Length: 244
Image (tube, rainbow, N blue to C red; front, top):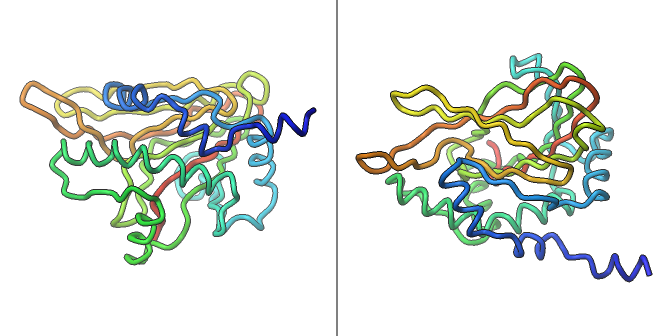
């Protein structure tokens, strides 16, 4: 019986296709981010988090304190990516590319993104951006991630996705995802995004369009993670452009 139920479980592509993309687009337009509940299963979250202990799946490790990025560490995956990460990248990109193209048109940016992620990666690789950017982040007690933007080269896809792999209140406390908007001639706005295990938050890499009294203008965004009070937190970051 258990085997039969596993066979019937929807694939990542099917889960992504079944999301309420109209609601996601509205949330991104109005709030600057959108959350998706339980996109990854408990087993998928556990398997990804356990990958962190091994170096074989990764191309590099970054200790944040050495670079002034905060406290904690992260590892960039190497190619070939794990199946779960590769499937998420391929499935999430097409609906997000439609939002990205609409945003660029609104902001007067000439860049347009192809429908398939493979075609966009070919564009990155032709420009020398060949290093994969999906990453696993690990935080312990007292760790945090300073506000930042994930810009790795000339070709940047304007949206990215972060998945919480740990259980808040059980595996860790604190460690909230934080997003800030730097609005022209106004004070910055902060958004704290609550997530459960397997949940995802979709948010801009750099900027997004916001409608003002004289039309649309660009708002710059940065993201980070607040200080962990206790425990250990793992996060998967899915970035769609590769690095130079």
